Every structure is written in C-alpha cells, then in structure tokens.
Image (tube, rainbow, N blue to C red; front, side, top):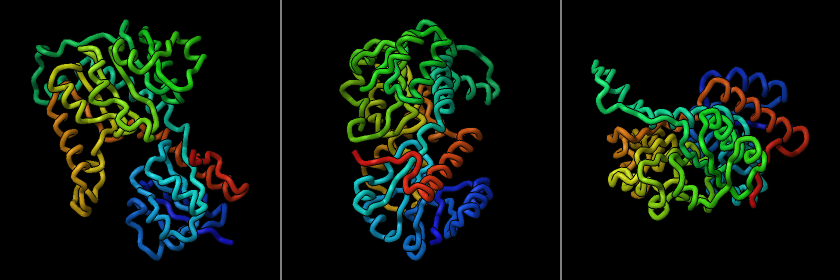
Length: 341
C-alpha cells in the first residue's frame, strides 16, 4: 500500500528534504502547500493518509469527517491545541508532535525579551532609527539581583532557569510537577502561582495551552503582580487575558510586557484573515484590537510568534517530523504520540 501524504504551512527550503524522505519510504506526495490544511481542496483531503501541519491549521471534527482515509496527523510544533484530539480519537487518527525542538531557541528568545524590557530596547532602537541619540528617558535596570518567576518548568522553562541563573537572579517556579534538579542546581524555589506573581520582578510563562491554562493570567490575579514588574509570554496567546494586560499597562500596575504570542495574533499574522478572506468572530477581532493597542506603548513589546524561528530549530522540527512518520510506518505508532487524557 502506498500512503498519500500532504504537508501544509511549508516554506520553500523544506520541499527538497520532504521529497528525499518520501522517496525513501515510497510515499505519494499529494500536496505541498504554504497554506493551512483547511484551505485544501476537497478531492485532496479525501486522499490523505498522513497530514503534516503547523500551528495555523485547524483540525476540528468537521475537517476530520472530510478526511475519510486519514490515519496520522504530524504537527510540526510542540503545542497541539489546534487539533481536536477527541475528534481524532473518534476517527482512529493518531496525532504526534515535536516536543523538544525549541528548548534552547525559545529560552534564548525569552531572555532577549526580558533584557529588551529592562534596557528599553524598543524606545532606544526607535529613537536612533530617527537619528536621535539623546539618552533621556532610556535609563534601564539590571537583571542581576531580580526575582524571576518561571511558570511552567518543562523543557523550555527549565532551560530559561538555567540561562537566567548566569545573571545571578533569585528564581521562583510554579509547576504541577516540581523538578528537584532545578532546585538543587539553580536554587529554584517552587511556590504557588499567587506567591510567584506577588514576589517576582519578572514573570515568564512556559505552559501548554489547555482548558486549565486558559487565561492563566487574568484580570484578577494580574493585580497580585508587583508594581514595576514585567510579564513575558512565549507560550500560547490565550494563556494571558490580553484585556487584563491592557488595563494593567494603562493603570501603571505593571512596568512592561513582552508578548511573542497573544490573543488575536492570527488576525495580524494569517494572510487570509488580513486580506479579509474569512469571517472574523467579534471576540477574535476585539482581542486583536486590544493587542494592537499595546503597540503604541513604549513599554510593550509584541513579536509575531517568532520565538521558535531559528535555522537550527526548524531543522530539528523537520527531522523529528520525519522520525514520527517513519516510526508510524514501521511500528504503527509515531515516536511522539499525543493522546487524549
């Protein structure tokens, strides 16, 4: 049997590697697309045995119903909230992800965002780009001696702690599964989320998006954060209530915020939404406008879901995706299967 495979949300450099891999395993490539899978033609969706997607492909029950032959979804991301796992299980479709490509990549980016806030990089770069070299209003703060609160101490959060320890910070951590090694090696102290928010100078988020983590930072608990503190999010947008952040910035309750991922980001990032090809839900548009409002504040840094985006990480993503698919073909199970809990 020759399996039919489609790859979505691709960049041009990936195609030669995909053809080399699929030839090795005698796979028939029926689609190589830079678009999300939901934009695929109906006749192609019906052919797919294996689909490899990225974060803007939305695989819900309706889409699974249209892919009658589908056996495997290999997402080229760590997060999998764009895939309806319940619907996949009901259809007998296995789902796998890439859990370990971005440890270093996202952790380094997180440290960069922290420094950009503390040292006022946004205002500095904007001013110098206009030919203005005055230092007035650009006085920053040192990271050394601050208390860093790390929410989520999995692969990425652990790497953030390791890197941050070189700056001689005090580290508070919050996770359902404490890591004794982080306590022993870097002096991390596991505390409740409430204590972490109230005692940290900088709070950085590294949790997956689940119903439990939806608006983990919200209008109520953001009030616990110290005045003059900073909030960083490189996890998933809906982990933070962007409306609560806007209020906190306007009222001066937090000193700054850096969001690489934020609610409503798809309105600005996804081409089909920018060009008006789809209907925008009112709530999504509202979140997008709130995030856009933050752009006007010199102490708010927004970036386009870019923390993962390095040559090295993208290479690891593709390599691990191939490992997932080959394991499925050879053993019936992908290497990093994601199962409904």
